[in-house]
Length: 402
Ligand SMILES: [Zn+2]
Image 1 (cartoon, rainbow, N blue to C red):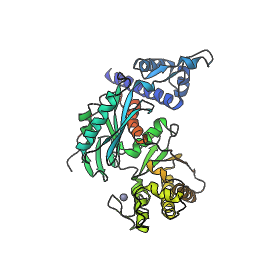
Image 2 (image 1 turned 45 degrees about the horizontal axis):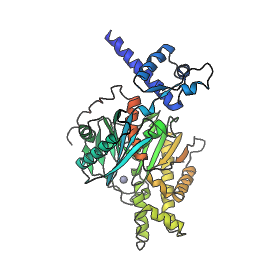
Image 3 (image 1 turned 90 degrees about the vertical axis):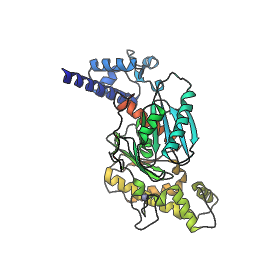
Image 4 (image 1 turned 30 degrees about the vertical axis):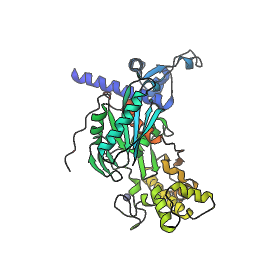
């Protein structure tokens, strides 16, 4: 009897996920259409949608029914019914957003860090979380959790930052630390994974099964989505595209190795390469390189084109390995613009394996809240697809001491 109960529970959970997934991808539809799309029985649809309506996760759309024959009332996800908080850890501040389940930003705040340690970050996260909760326009809308995205290798299942060269952290059980201080469910992940999660849930990759996201900026990151899921390993090290070799014995990288892709393509490294070549100019930001180009000063061009070529070749290598249907380029570094991105596209095309599928390479129009929305996506992903006991996420076991 007990096994039968467990099976029924598992089946209902699976059916919930199927229905929510279908509605998330395709938008509102009638119960009949849901049954056709999911191959679930009418009885299962009735049971599960009743539960989801009672929980406020679905709403009926009578205004859409009038346009359809026989007036079945379509069901849709109640995106406004719950809120999530997403935070991006930067070197000097936390960027935090409050979103609905569609990752629409309701409110946002930036909180400066007083220092680089986990305790400093927890303190800033607490300020951000308190502010966003206190100023919630509708304080009765439940907060389902907090997601935090940061650069580095993250063991997502255990909520541990294995290493972040930028933050100088090694084996920090940051998920536990944050959860204990914020008092809400918390998920942490690598920033590229978080960005890919948002693209998968509500972005341009919503209907893609296999795709890759590459992020440009302070570092170079990548996230791999296979069979509709972000590829996360227990070691957290997948997608470290910034540290693949592009130049044996080349420029030093923040990871301690030499010749990494990041050391040629990241925004600080573009600036450093220009300053090495033209020390008298004293450029500080990558935007200043663009300003030089706009002023018909072509000196940054070879550096940007070289970076684009290396990036394009790396994308071709990724494509040969993973066969993605789509590649999305995001991150604040996309402001480097046409010089780098054209060279990237050209190198990518030149290395294309003849007769193999060639994925579109889409460049994101970046906005500053995109990292935070991605981090909120970690929460929404678990809410829709994770354990149904989402309000009490499983506590990860502690890592053994190093
Ligand atoms: Zn490196």
